[in-house]
Amino acid sequence: MAKLRHIALHTPDPEGTAEFYKRVFDMVEVGRTDSPIAKGIYLSDGTINMAVLRFKTPEAADRHDGLGPVFGLHHFGFWVENPDDTRRRLKEAGAEYRESRSEAATTSFFEEKYKGPDGVMLDITAHGWAGAKPPSKGHQKEKSVND
Image 1 (cartoon, rainbow, N blue to C red):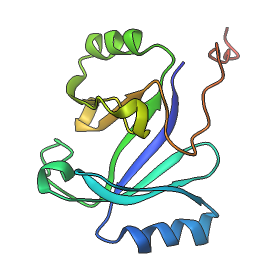
Image 2: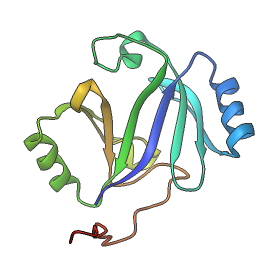
Image 3: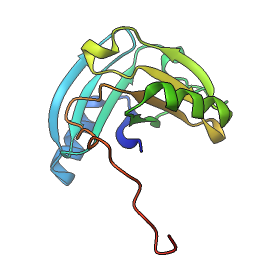
Image 4: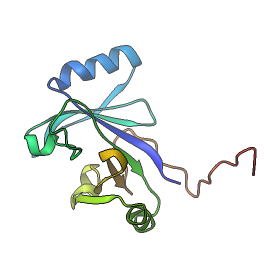
């Protein structure tokens, strides 16, 4: 089972926004980025990595949901155990492949980006994000009371 381990916010003020989450929710800074795509700060609560980003171009900020570049939630990401199986399931479910990053394994960025239901952007990675808790090996779905 994939584990939600990454959330990305688009903000005009990464410093101020990151300071808010650090002060109010005790999140810890685990890194910074100044890539060709965005400048920002990575925070963590010990389980999830949250990227607080200012995208450098309107194209990078565009979530491909028809609204153009807007501030707020930009995308979220899943740390997956089997990328090939996840790709297959994404395709079968009708998700639209958007892009890949070849340097992902060495930079803790997403590996692939997809457009899911309602135009929501999502990432998948087999390498994770700084400050995010790795999924436990061989984790199983919890049984419901009806199982």
